[in-house]
Amino acid sequence: MTLLVEVLEFAAATAAAAEAALGEAELQGDVPCPSACRCDDGFIYCNDRGLSIIPPLPLTAAVLYLQNNRIDNAGLPTSLERRLTVRVVYLYDNELDDFPTHLPPSLRELHLQDNNIRTLPRSALARLPLLEKLHMDDNSVSTVSIEDKAFANNPRLRLLFLSRNHLSSIPSGLPASLEELRLDDNRISTIPTHAFRGLSSLRRLFLDGNLLANQRIADDTFSRLSNLTELSLVRNSLQAPPLNLPSMHLLRLYLQDNAIAHMPRGSLDGMRRLQKLDLSGNNLTTLPRGLFKDLDSLSQLLVRGNPWYCGCNLRWLHDWLHERGASVTVRGLTCHGPERLRGMALRDLTSQLEDCEVSVDTAGAMVGNDGAKKEKGYFPTQAPATTTPPLPQGSLFTLRSRRPGHKYSDISQDSLGGGNGVTGKAVG
Image (cartoon, rainbow, N blue to C red):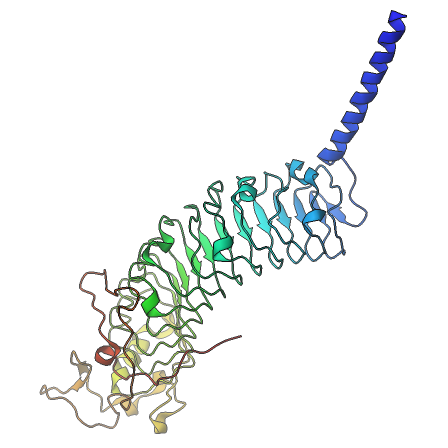
């Protein structure tokens, strides 16, 4: 009788163990490729299938393509966090309202764009300690909905995309590991000095399509980003480049589609590695002599959509273009005035510049060999006087230059040609 009891107990224990093993196998994903998906050596293609729930996944799953479905938060099984082979998950263009909480901790790259996620909770992000790339574009995240120290447990995060959300300021507590930050098309209007503190590894920063104006950008906002190689401030309300731009490593600077009416002398000083400069779609009529004196590496200069006035004040730029020759590609340096030169490329002007003197005094006027200022000539010295409002000073921050010997004067003192009073352009 005792032996029979032992046999029955052993059988029951074996059955329970078998059931547990089967359940564990299901949890661990030891299942075939889902019928609605296609599997290829760890790549699981379940995108564009109309799915509302993530099906059981094979044990070998490494990259999950789940985009363009109808998956909401209820459609994320808890077993997903046990798939420790998963490295990349594409969940963009679904119906998620909250940041997913049952993702595998092995995840390196996560695509959640085009959902309706409103918050970034620290608890959910803490489950992803190996995360390197996070795509959160086109959601509904606001500044206040990013939990304090949300990224405290993501020491490997290198890329963060938060474009087209509802941000009104730069998120705080960003990890020091960040190398690329995209905050395009938000509602950011102010950048205080501490906004990028600790982000010494940041190399690419995109702030296109916000509400930024010079008086709301603190002096040292960008100078702290000593390793920055690319800065984009397209489609804002800048009247001049921000003060103290990082110069040591900057390779690409995008300032197009603002309201820039002048480029202060010295604003590009020290940018010896700069390769691409885009000033298209602004209100520039002229550029101060010597603006490009440090731009030895410049290979692309894009200046379309500016009302260039081809007077003697641009003789220096004409000469610079010919000195650089084919080493620099220039697009859009076409005369808007005077009328007889409209439509002509500055580079192609020859006889029209013969009456321009070689030297220019500190005020930008042409000076003859006898030291007398040239009052008249075949080529006008500068554009007709226009009213250009000075940059607002001190309304929010005190603007000052940290670069030794570098002073920024008011537009009325520094601009050779003046602006045309046109406001910034909105680009869809």
